Length: 180
Image 1 (cartoon, rainbow, N blue to C red):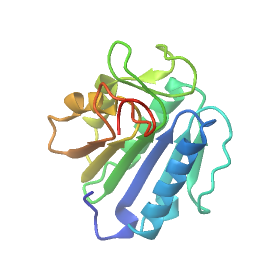
Image 2: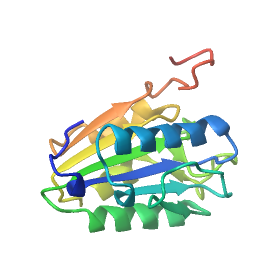
Image 3: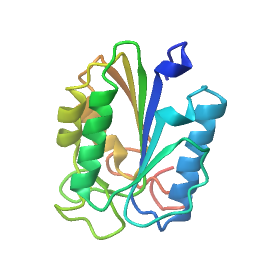
Image 4: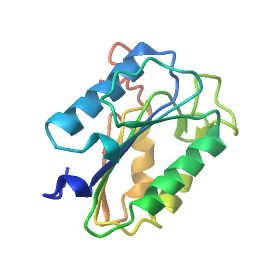
């Protein structure tokens, strides 16, 4: 992860879809802890966006938490975040965890329901949004199943780094028959 030296120039957008899955909530809480304690991200520069429901997030005071209901809300929040943080001196982290789907190509699930056009985000949409980002450093981390399928859409830019939990054909759940 490329990090700027000034804490005031570090911003993070963390997303989890299904909020009824404890491991996804713990994942977000752990990432917030690492960002604030190790990388010195100010709590006020971290935005946690979560799918429908009101999970008991244990994050420091000042972390901005946003409850979304659908794909439209997710897209709106990410677009606002990217626009607000398009500054050449900033380090921006986009972190996605939760559900993934590989029906007709890889997708990020916005909620815990069955995948449909109303609750998934595909690699092309994400690439189009990231292409408008004019900040300094953009690090994208995707932990959901089939997250490697986003790599082909995002690999042709020198403006960001991309890390995924598994290939486009693997489940990222550690106890699954596929994946790590």
